[in-house]
Length: 76
Image (cartoon, rainbow, N blue to C red; front, side, top):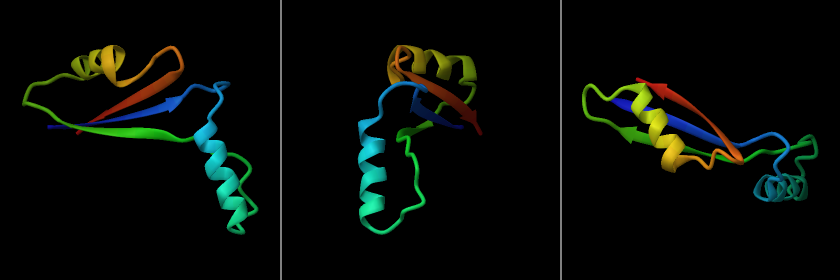
């Protein structure tokens, strides 16, 4: 079983990496980009029977800094 966790900075939290990407894209001639938010995707290979609740606990304890980041879980 696999799970995919997407972690992003919460709205209102400064994203210096996203801003650097936006600036670099503008320097390369891509003028239509008004904002970039950068995040991370974590793919987990799980033992059979692992529940989404367990993955949520993983996010809460380690995979996401819930003070400044939000996350979503896809099981499949």
